[in-house]
Image (cartoon, rainbow, N blue to C red; front, side):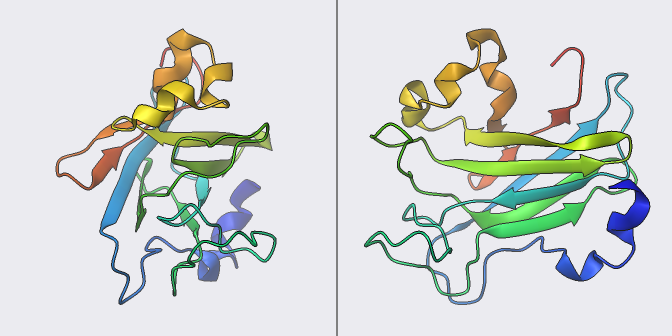
Amino acid sequence: VGPYLHIGLTWLNTVNLVGAGIAAPPITIAGRITDGDGVPVTDALIEIWQANEHGRYAHPEDRRDLPLTPGFTGFGRMPTDAEGHYAFTTLKPGRVPAPQGGLQAPHVNVTVLMRGMLRHLYSRIYFHDEAANADDPVLLTVPAARRATLVAARGDHPYAYAWDIVLQGEG
């Protein structure tokens, strides 16, 4: 973890997951990572992994009969900037199968790595405009008072979402 994510790993940084010729409209997910005192975390690395707009992962183990999106891998990675900000351009994911059957709400899987945190933080980003959130089996395991921390708000245009990460404390 440490400072090494800035040394030799920058070639893996991918902030734009949407390649040329993709028909689905791109979305932006942007936010800021802060610590428990509200101080920006300037040396974090955030990774995302998600299904495409049809709900299929670009992974050999996802053999479902759903279209793959050419040029879309579903994986992104970027370090936070000097103010703790990050942003990805991606596709809004489709629904994927739930562990016990049925479907999960559209979501993006998130991993956060940073100095002083020996274990990665795993989370999810859900979208506030998804009715399917009400039935998502994973989101329903989160106490109702905390669910809003996993839901990205509408940003400044129809295809923008804002999702901040507060590592501890209020929010």
